[in-house]
Length: 601
Ligand code: ADP
Image 1: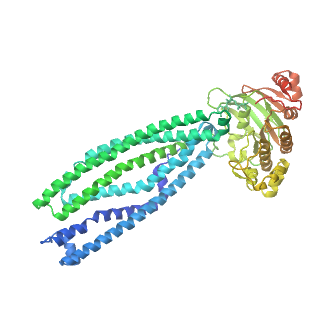
Image 2: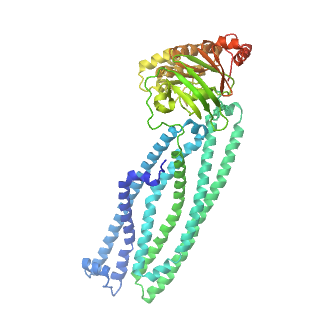
Image 3: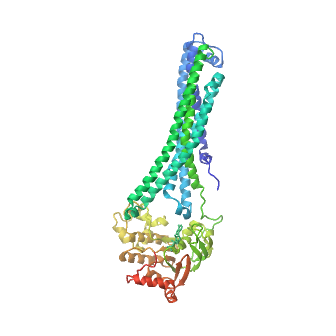
């Protein structure tokens, strides 16, 4: 994948930046000209014998003649004009940098978010949400604030440096060399510190995102934290990270804090040198008093850009580190992606086939070993087996959340790797054990998989899912906001919304991680009824926990240690006296009499 450079980011804003650069040049020239009216007043007005030679003096004579009052007026007016040019250029420059900064931030945010959403589940399984969040927020922010406050400021400072040194060399090159004698020392110090500060800043950012990760993890599992009364432990964990954060931040801060005063002292030595030698030269008459004023003004301003540039290293290193972290995400390859000429899946009968599928999450021990089976369109297939056997992994391979290490997964005879992922997933609906609801009205939550659905369709889906009745009783009916910080729903109600979601998608393939586990008998009955309606005429793969579902299955696959060890109908498997009949015996022992025991987790 091609590397995304900072130039790529700035390219779309090329025209604005050109405007900004022109403004910077204007402001630079204005600053350079600032002491000149004063020089003219000192050398051409206040002196008893005004100088008449030199191009500047000739220009003054041409414009204002030799009348001292006229020259004074000219100097005063130029002073105001210079100030106005400076003001306008500075405004334009600030406006342009702010707007470019905002647009780059927008572009980056869009690109990173789009990429994060496209990254495979294998990436998200191991990525820390807090870390990703801090990349999308703080890191992008750092880049933005550098563009706003650093990019063109750096240019203006460089221009000022070059301009002022040029003018000083023109006025008196020997004196300029004396004034600049401290520059090498300054350069070395700035260079050395910049490198150290950049390294420290990187550590600070890393720590900050670790802290966000810890908080995010706890906030998203606050129920578990409370249930196990682990608040103190989690508090301690955060404090530990936060203390480490302080230590690292202080180290970085102390480096930064040392730099500015060091520069300040060196600058003072340089200024003292100029005052001393320049004063002597003016007394001896080798330098005009006006030129000395220009020199002193420039020297005062000359070190400022250096100091500014050295301060800017902080903003720059933050931005560089932020940008590096953003690029890491952007350059992360997707493991599961569409092949070059991926086919769009249109009509699907619903045949699912696994052909010698072997799979592992971490390319170590295989989780699935040589799994082969074929499910005919419209069949109901139940996966049973002990926890950790690989059932969830099998159903994750059907929508191609992961790619098998070897072997093929086929839908209607086509290798799913040759199909466009989106078109594949459009033909598969899920009802899982945990149903996530979004912070949105029920209408939108039901229509999540088919945003184009009209109200009548949503209502019908809710009715078929046995959800209509309870939704109507909610404070705002279908307009009730659910999900995070919305109205809370019971497990059974959430599942019926999930079933309505699946009904509305009306896909030929259904995947159920049996959604009735953990429900009370009354809820369960409603959920089962809804599921029955949902499954009609569809190829359904269900991780089954309930005997009632298993009994009805056209085929049962018994999964153990990543292999399908037995398959067949309920009665056949019982007769075979294998693992299934063992599990069944176990179930009957725990049964509540209505077929609700647990085969597996
Ligand atoms: P089941 O659904 O039968 O309980 P799973 O398919 O969830 O089993 O898990 C099979 C094996 O794969 C287990 O050993 C589990 O630890 C491992 N596993 C599951 N998901 C992941 C994952 N995202 N990353 C790494 N290993 C995983």
